[in-house]
Length: 92
Image 1 (spheres, rainbow, N blue to C red):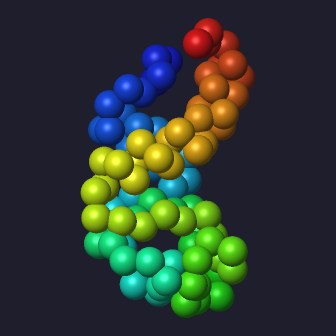
Image 2: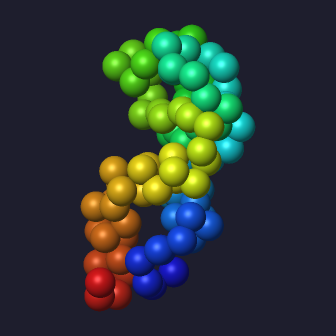
């Protein structure tokens, strides 16, 4: 992928390819907050669970609008995307 993903499906694909889990909520993560879905580091199971919020576990966001979570996660990690593009020789 050489262009900046600008759709939820493109952003989701990038997140998954770079080690994030996107999908149904694990109820043991961010127990302080409601939501059916989550975006989190894929290795979240290696952390002590349950977690109340992001301060005592993996990077994780939860909510009911999966596309909004994907966009928020991509926006937070966009610098990772930009770096991967420069490393691969592409220009933004």
